[in-house]
Length: 208
Image 1 (cartoon, rainbow, N blue to C red):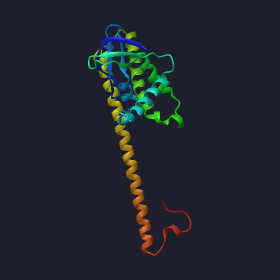
Image 2: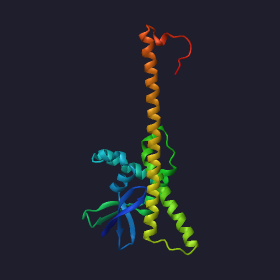
Image 3: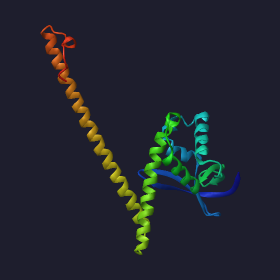
Image 4: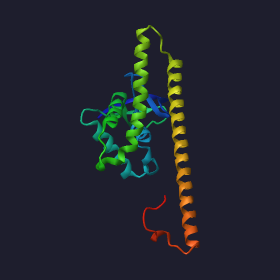
């Protein structure tokens, strides 16, 4: 394990689709990365309530290592916010983690990773989209500055929120329909009972 005693700079990094992470930059080696707890917070957020438990935290770390395989290397950096060294994944390894989560074959055995895969797909799609459009802009000699990237991410987030809102409305409509159908059924059965008829003993198909 590589040790680096230099203090890393800290900044919030926008990954897109509403996901942010505390980024680290080592100015000596000019490398970027994020601490393991930050990675867990973004991709394994369903576990964060229990992440203070050392066993749960250890399981998350093992999962990350398993997804990355044997070819990644850990580094330990101090930062402006913490003089104690923290275990860091460099950006190349974070890239690999996103990719592995995106293409992961979810089975009964690892279905607990479904939330992490959904988050990775959202982030991965946004990063891919930005990279693709920047390649096109490069082809036409157009500059892709910070303002452009921020606007691109905002447009993506607005579109995602609009889609979520639309899905919520559809779900609400479907629930109202189900409740209405249930009320009709209950009223029909009540009327039958008032006539001394058991609705469950009526021969033939039920009306609803």
